[in-house]
Length: 81
Image (cartoon, rainbow, N blue to C red; front, side, top):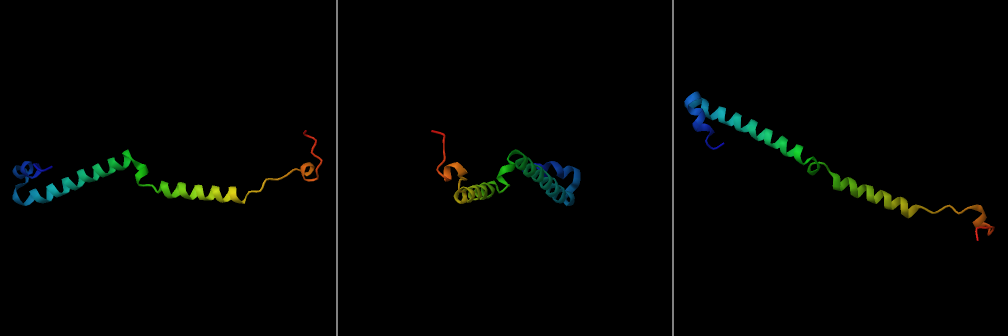
C-alpha cells in the first residue's frame, strides 16, 4: 500500500495518482474491515449484556419460585414411607 502511488504515477500522472490511490486504499481497507467482522462477529454483538440479562432473569424466577406441595403432604396424609 505504501508503493501504490509509485505504481499508479506512470498510468495516471501527477493529478490522477492521489485520487486513485485514495479510492483504492479506501476500498482495500473496507474489504479488510468486512473480513474482520466476518471472522469474529461476536465482538460486535452485545452478548455479554444479553447473557447478564438472561442470568438476572433466571435468578429472579428462581428467587420467586415456591414449590407446590401436594395436598397429601400438606394435610399430613403422605403414605410414601
